[in-house]
Image 1 (spheres, one colour):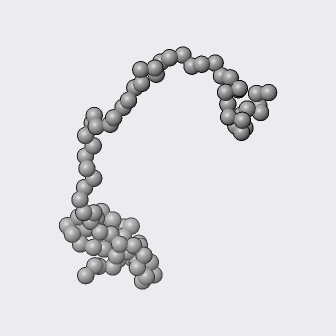
Image 2 (tube, one colour):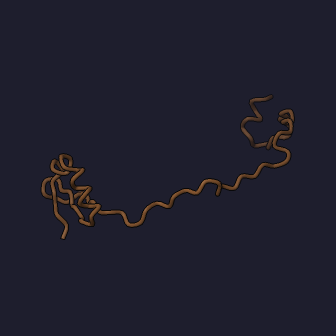
Image 3 (cartoon, rainbow, N blue to C red):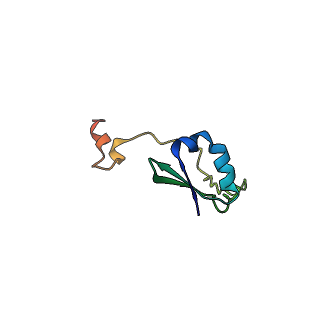
Length: 85
């Protein structure tokens, strides 16, 4: 069964409570005798990131010059089209 501690005690002894949680205990934190939170150990750890697994695609034309901006090629409903006329 989980032990219940009040908020003040939890703030004062957080490191001790976390050590107990790491060993498998469950702690309930209460405010005014009413349970509001549960401290419990997380099962499993986050997987370690392996560098180099991201897929990056660089297209052959990535450094081509940008064509001159032409409002005639904009969509007729684009609100930026009105600001160019």
